[in-house]
Image (cartoon, rainbow, N blue to C red; front, top):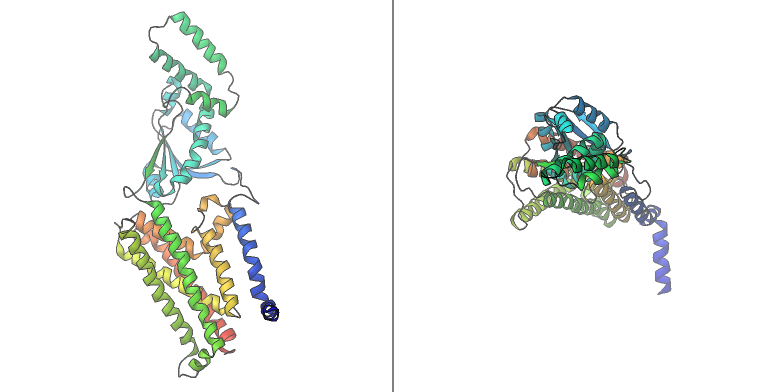
Length: 416
């Protein structure tokens, strides 16, 4: 029994790549999730400003000054845009949100009325939008200053106690002015504003979407989970090439009158067909059982399914081509798939991640497939709206196919 265990240990230790991947996988995942959730590099607001649109329909000195001060903050970065174009871009998912200053904003500051300010946000990114609302409200209150808040308080007092003696009212106004001169910090300002009522210091928030009652969480669950599990499936199919080589099946196939690359592409075609069927079945289950609504163009959904399956199948043969053994292929596939799924949006929402990880996401299959399904299933996207996702999936898949064809001759064909 001991000799058998020692024999297996010696075999395991000879596989250096497999050995490294066995211990490297948990280390990489700990580091990855630590970075994503702020363990090693806790992101400050300065590192991750909320980049949103701003539309100034008032064009008053007060609105211009408020926008300039907001834009100078570390937490917020504003891009001027027209209202119509901004709404269109937010609905298309090109920007998280848009802050709108309506006409009369400047007058409301002077009169102590409710400021006509509204935040439109992409309905698919509600959680992310919620995170910036406090920053906007608190900073707006600080920027608009204590004068506006005092006037709002006095207006509220006058409305609630219209018959109060004028001398008593004057004393109340003096006392309020004393409390608000100066405002010590934005927390004090926000607290004072919110104690008056929901209309004081409020920010109207409105979601933007092309369809009503879209279950974005269900789309995320389908797209994120489907692509990740698809990658695991095709990686296993691709690594079977190495099993056929070790078992001698590949050598017998090479005696057949065919180009050796046909073996590689045949395996890839099988992976692509199976991946396409898997995606269709998973989508059908999500629609018929879980209630996902598809009101968009089914042709574009199918086109995205095909390109996703192609990219995943290319990944499967790519992993097999760069591995020296089936164990190496399985270990390498596991670590690469988990990393791609984490930084690509299958496991962790992208807005949680540091800036450098969000930039890395664009090289993953998960990212482009998830973005494409969000556009087709949630935004009724046309071809031009999903063209970039399709092009990137084709580019990533083709690049891996070319590399796989080269390495197949070098690592598998010659060895066999």
